[in-house]
Image (spheres, rainbow, N blue to C red):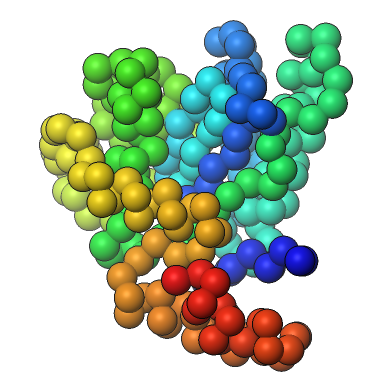
Length: 235
């Protein structure tokens, strides 16, 4: 069965995950991590994608991003993939694919879920038992969002900026979100939305998106692309 086109909703942010092929490592050295972030910045800027949060794990990456237009995220990931895979294969004297198929993504409802996804992404190393607190992991956006260090890659989202007008108080407010682990229900919702390449939001938001893209897809296909089919497959 043909893959459904990716969802594009103007103004919305997206949670992205890309995994190493067969869950194998895609980073070995500090230079690998640093090189990936350099290429991510270049590709994001050239494709008009704002990066709000990220974490580079040993065998996968997470990002929270906002594209300016339809297709911008795919173009960014293609550009990033070409550059980084070429570097990684050369550095490690290997050939072949590095990533496990195409990346997963979900549309994120801003008001209810955006900061929750920030937390989910930056708490990955804590859930993996790599560090005790997000601040201890050097390869995530917590270094900017929670610790106030300069990370030129990051474009703060308005929801993050709303935490406080003062940058120090904003970082303090953000750090307060990281007290304890996330509820299991939030983890399940985020993972399900990613797995289905669908929507992370409440029922009203999901219906709104389903109606929007359902109308669009009905123009290009038969019953299998109808609103009813999308609801049965995605919600």
